[in-house]
Image (cartoon, rainbow, N blue to C red; front, side):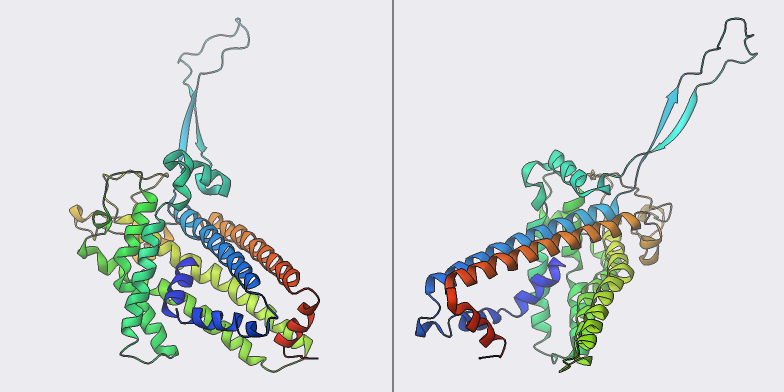
Length: 361
């Protein structure tokens, strides 16, 4: 999840100094040349930027469109069939035309089809649609969280509280990003895309829950790792990796997707009716949406946002495809960096690796 990575990176910017120090620790001995450090750093940064962009396109941009799209239907009308022979008597009533209800294939049913639709709507820069808004939200969330951590300790409980509070406070910024992603190109400014104050209480709850999920996943993985700590048993190691994998899969299916869809659909419900949406979108949410002019809240309810969502299977397969794409990219990144590492150090690469793993001999 790109927004979580960005927020954590901004909250712990001091890690950059630690990384730099670890890379140059042994450089005074001449074992690792400066140009080698620069090459590895450039390769790592280039891959990380590429991974962030791909993650944004797949898990944020396309996922938001898929969670909002309502597959359309079309009615086809065909002329009545003529009599097989002229000798057959004509009926007393004229034959009526045949009508057929056809379900259109969703635009977001495939990654390639969605990207093609985005290019048609916004040109070559469509892949980064709303990226500036997204970065602003990530920075604001980290800034608010850092301020709150000045008055509360950094522990498990307060990490959840601070993350939820920051998510709720910055909910209008995330709603503005959703507005930018879903709407067609217009001259609307950033401030015009922020929903009214009256709708904040509607979008604050799903935004707070969504902000907490990555921390819960992280704590669950840490708990699994601590259970098998200092164990050299390969069976226990296999169980550890298996448990971690199932935690990630289960949390994605049963927590991440439902909460993210609820948040996105709630934010989509507050978009003004005079704004054009780039995908088919049922503004009534299967009849569960009541406009403010008719006495409603002007937004879909928390539970109704998920219950009215019909594209769950489509979004699930999108996340599956995204997982394998990201896995392949990261595997290729480590492969390239590993080859560069051995090419730079030559025969001394082996001892360096053993030393890093705690085996000097």
